[in-house]
Image (cartoon, rainbow, N blue to C red; front, side, top):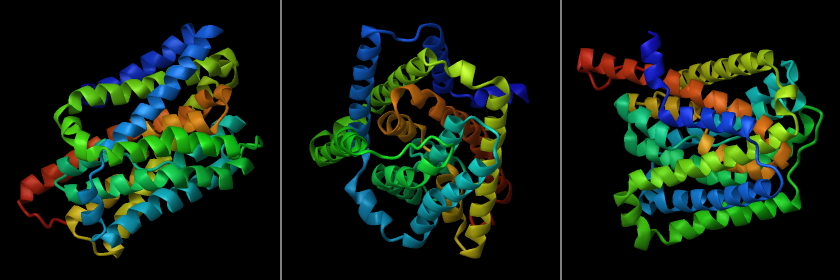
Length: 331
């Protein structure tokens, strides 16, 4: 059992943990803090440029046809999740910034790569998963900051709204690179497709840069004196509970909507996931540098929990389909 769980811990998670450890032991200070911050900003721009280049216009056109499914995914991602985040924030006994991080987690868009991968493993509608996850991330660039402005200022007692400077940073660091990457897709799309492995390294390396800069700044400000082991355990418990509630909701919603098996799987995986790839750079833009490390703790814990849970569930659906040979098995 332990070996099966360890097998689900992807190497990137180990790299994330190693980055946090490095930031704890050797946080960037002085001129190196500036260098790390600039490198993180460059990484954010590159990250969203690549996201834009990966999104095909064909996916946007095809995806518009399955509007009921996509609305269900978006409603779960940007309505049900935030409502749960607000409810958890009012009752959880955690430091203010951690509560803001927990709410910030619920405001993020869905993942792209892992949602598609788990849908494929479960024999779901992969094309619909590509569209739903892409729509979620595209809309999230604008909607997540708006939701942060509406909700986080009233949670945790430390008003963290969206300033004019933050809006400018979102436009320049996130939206503009995304649009430029997408506009250049006719010329670089084939290159992006052909070198997925290399681009994945760049993509994940950008996240690690931002995490190192964020946690390094937080450590300098006394991160581990503000968050205890008991707090970490409580965050993990709340993330697990949050994921379980949303998965139950998406399963019941799929039955209520009478979705086909393939579409129900898309709703389950795309509707219950939250994007670390979008959350890390957005936190770097929306929160002060000294706060980003604390805010990201729930996002990082939820990311690993969702990977383990979704891997088990995807395999279960695949095995059930293999046993019955029935493509219309109920979800």
